[in-house]
Each structure stands twice: as C-alpha cells, then as structure tokens.
Image (cartoon, rainbow, N blue to C red):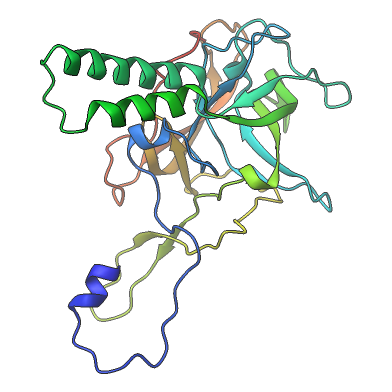
Length: 283
C-alpha cells in the first residue's frame, strides 16, 4: 500500500484513512505453520503435552474466535480429533487441563529439523543459503525456547447427534484463549461492483481492526449459502453449499449421517475448498 501511494502524484494530503491491523488473508501453508503472537484462522495448533490421553504429535487448523452471550471470555474453535484418538468428548462442567499450543508440536519440530539441516550443510560447505550461520543458530535458539502456549480446552464434542430428526456427525473443540493471544477472524464478503456491465460478484476480505470480529450467533445451513474457511494446508478458500446427503457413512462410523457438500467457488484462486489434513491420526 505504501509503495502504491508513493507512486501517485500528490501535492498535499488532506485526509487519509487506514485500517488498523492486517486486512489480508493467509493463503500460504508455510505461513500458517509458523509462530504468530496472535494467530488467525487456519494457523496450526495441537496439544502441548501428553496428558489425559492427548497426543502432541497431532495438529489441526485453528477455527474462528467467538464469544458466548454476555460472557467476555474469548474462545477459539477447532476439531476434537486434534487431541488424538484417546480423548473422550470433554464436558464443559469438568474439563481436564489440556493445554493447546501454537504452532503445533509437529510443525515446530519440522522447522527445527529444517534449520538444523541448513546449519549442518553450511558447516560442510554444501549450503547455498545466503543467511549467515550465526543468524540461523539464533533463529534456532529462539525457536527452541519459544513460548507457544495458546489456550486451554474447555469443551468438545465428537460423535453423532440429532438435528431436526436427522443424524449429523459432530467434531468440535472449544478453547479458552487469553486476550493477548487472540487473533482476528477471516471474514469474506461478496460485493456487486457498480457500473454498466459489472454485475458479476467479487469476493474481498472485509476490513477489520485489532479488536477482531467475533462470532456470537448461529444460523441454519442452507443450500446455496456461501461459506469460507482457513486451513493450515489450503489457506483461505471460498465455496458454496451445493446439497446435503442424508445417507453418508464416514470412515470408522457405521451410523448413517447427513453431510453437507461444499464446492469451491469460481471466485477463489484455489480449485478446492478443503483437503484432508497431513498430520494426525486417520479418522
């Protein structure tokens, strides 16, 4: 934005409005797997320790931030199976102390391994990396001593529930997050640009500030609805609900459930809406 502004011919600035905070989405998987002091949707998270059956070797994508009613507490969402196959659904009245970290342990371990490999290659004169070895060693030390605690699990659901008389699979995780760790939600808007011959839709990120945009309500999922998501492997994608299939059987579950099919939008720059995660147990 600054570079574009500098290219313009100008005499004086009367008034200039800027949005506080970053208004971009994170569409590159590598960015979603690295540390952010206030992670946004799609960032990699996972259990911090092997406690109460949690598996630190699993990871998942950070979902949206929300507030519940008049409660000032900030929560983040993800999927229950990110905790591993040995953790039962968590009761909100008596949750175990399962801490969540960001980035997930597998992603931190992968970054450490990559940097150590670059340092070894440099010491053997085989590296073409232009970054000095001392800089790599400093980055490595910072990564190993990183305080990547993110929040604490307060409730979850996993299994099959009935909604409007139909079986629907559920897989969700609610995490209490301190304010200083809270990022912002990615919110995509459809706009109709004015002017002759410009009736096509365009998608853009809605501006937001550092206070974030919090989800605080529910709505029915309907055919034709536009939805967006941010994942650690696919980044930000947009799709449209095409249909619901009421006789679906998921792997490892004999119960027929109603599942919604979302097809990637032609307005997005990615050909798929979502894909199976790389890390974690197979479900």
